[in-house]
Image (tube, rainbow, N blue to C red; front, side, top):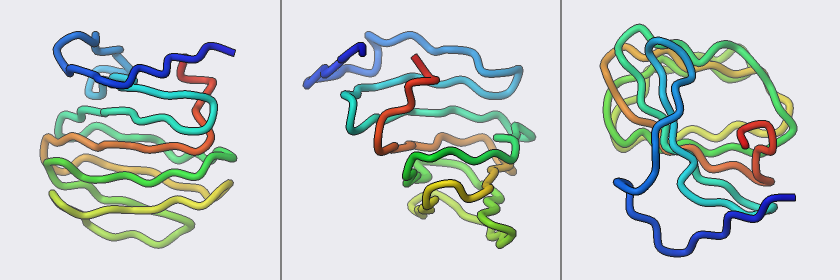
Length: 112
């Protein structure tokens, strides 16, 4: 397994990965147990409904998002957080350009 394990990370040194026309992400650092990912959305970007075995907690660094977890929807803004337990369906719709900081346990092998 790849072990990135970067301890001191400068945002400028990492490239954006294009997810789709309105979403891009940077994998900031990780090891097999933990991963932090910065995800930038343009208004109208949709993190489509999905589930995964990983625990996820996401901090809204900027913007406004409509977040749905297990059928419950709430509009969240800068400074808010949402937690996704393992294997629950969830999605995020960007209502105003913004950035999410996603933390996963264990790391998302499918992202690398």
